[in-house]
Image (cartoon, rainbow, N blue to C red):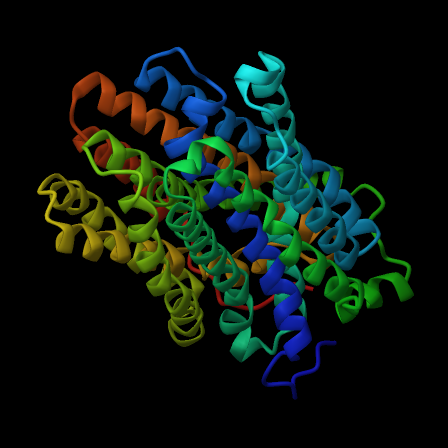
Length: 422
């Protein structure tokens, strides 16, 4: 049984989970910003701006389609060998691949091998990311007191929003310090800087204890040797629910985190302005993720998700009008609102998804459908949004597209009693 007397998670545990999820989103934020500002020229030269951006975002999407495969492999490990092992392995994969991107030669030096290696490293990133967030959510949901489960599991998304902030800070600092040297070499320091968080988080995760509920399964010899087969047999409906609930939230998250930066460049904002806007906006997302956890504990994970899904739909039909004014104050306000909103929207997932599955195949039940929907919603949405804007000259269809996905999530969100299954 979980220890109900603990009100606050130990500091080292907080940092170990926080640092890993921060690294995951740091990886994706610096890559998506690089795709918008640098990669189209560094790895895809001699083509038009539109094709360069689409090619860069295409390599971004490749990482997402590796996530379900990573989820398939690591969910089996998580349900058979333990949650902690996955937390350690995924961190190593993500950290190594991000660091290695900083050493990639450009197209002029290495030709077609250069973007090919970029795609390979994106696949490694995707394999690690395919289990990272779920690993953190499952781990924290299993050790948290019930009445504080929303707050504890929100640490995963506090980590992701912090990673966004650090990614924006890195780009801003490098651009400021390098001047006109961003495209030559300075961009590489953004990727190389990931080694510091990777090493620290890796050492802390090695010291994490296994969750008590998983240890109880081991002691009672009730470990499920084929968790993927069992979850398909016994919880297929719950897996569909995870898929559709996550689809809308993940799509909006990566429209905000990725496509917004691309859209800024399309409507004429400079490479210097975009990282600064990201930096300010990310500051609002960090507390918002924890506030989302508090709301979850107060009104339940089902209600909090439904309210935020409707708010997100309204936001989507306002944000591009604000951007198109090119009023810098409005841009900052709506960018920050978007970051805060998606952080709060994702926070209830740790509690909500964990309730749908028993311990013996909880990891598999959450990871597989969640990462598949992430590949579709998160991986394709920025690319689809860019195509819609280039084809129509308007972002209205982006709002319609994402709102449709959020409505699917709204109707898939079943009311649950916020009681963790055993």
